[in-house]
Amino acid sequence: MSLVTSEISSFMANSSWIRKMFEAGIELKKKYGEDAVCDFSLGNPDLPPPPAVKQALFQIAERADQPFSLGYMPNAGFPAVREVVAKKIAEEQKTPIPASHVVMSCGAAGGINALFRAILTPGSEVICPSPYFVEYAFYAGNFGGKLVPVPSRDFSFELDIDALIAAVTPKTRAVILNSPHNPTGQIYSRRELDLFGARLAEAARKNNTEICLIADEPYRFLNFDNVEIPSVFSVYANSVVIGSYSKNLSLAGERIGYVAVNPAMTGADELLRALALTTRILGFVNAPTVAQQILEVCIDSQVDLEIYRNRRAVMARVLDDAGIEYTIPRGAFYFFPRSPVSDESVFVQKLLEERILAVPGRGFGCPGYVRLAFCVDAAIIERSAEGFKRAVKNCRKN
Image 1 (cartoon, rainbow, N blue to C red):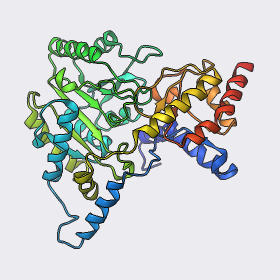
Image 2 (image 1 turned 90 degrees about the horizontal axis):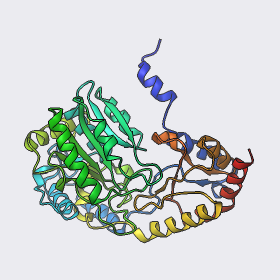
Image 3 (image 1 turned 180 degrees about the vertical axis):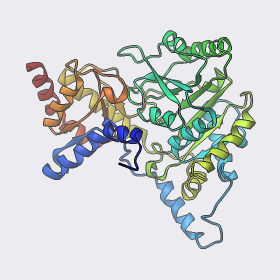
């Protein structure tokens, strides 16, 4: 007999492929040394935070002996922080956003969970394009919801709008889009979002239900080709944007993010009150105090995008030289190349034998591909070149 539920036991037994490969990498590094392993398994930003973050921490430390300097604040966050975040979101989304429509969260993950707690009931469905960030299924399941993955167009990973709309049922409560996308690096176009927004509104009316369109945007700043990242606010009234500062400020461990509710949403005020409540009752209480204060003065800072752009170019050369097919990622810091053999776990194993860590596409609901995170030094990517060639050759030999 165990205190742990059968559901959680099952989750543990089939835990994330990302974590499995990350842990395999730890063992390889222990055995062969850090410099002998090329670890592309985890999207953990390796660049140091911009200098402004260090200065902000000094300022926070200077006033740490003052009453309530690190104390509670309203569940939705410090008013001054919500003001600066709302201003930044308005610039990005090209839509005026009042501070009252922003709720600070414990990272984007905390924001998604707070939103799902507010809008899902047991049996509710959440649609998302596949491949997808695997935690979405767990987040929906936390509240009795069910994730409904819908395959994207093969290799290009553009939205299959007909298939997404066909998946809408009276149980659908949300659709979640992640752009720039993990794991493919795709950025959805204005044409795609305009069409999808119009058809989703029609499907919601036809099914007599309210459907929330969620834009999960933690990688918004990682836009290598300066293409438009269209706002969901302009294409669908019942929409929410969720973001974080894990990537652009390299604050992944600080868990700081936000939920922004479209001012045009019917019932926006009620949802905002619900988000403040769910933030509290889920045990988050409020977004981290120190991280909010960092954000207040560092909102316009970010790590050097050019470093990631250069790494993308290096990884592309390595894959080209190995004869591996891929669609160039326009954003985020991942490649999602096609495996040289249909069973990508065979390719992942051959890479592992070369001390290269990749994540099987099935870990993102898309077999036949692998994910490579290029948030590592360019020298590590270059060092992997011969290993990729040998792994491809050994796959095809079998």
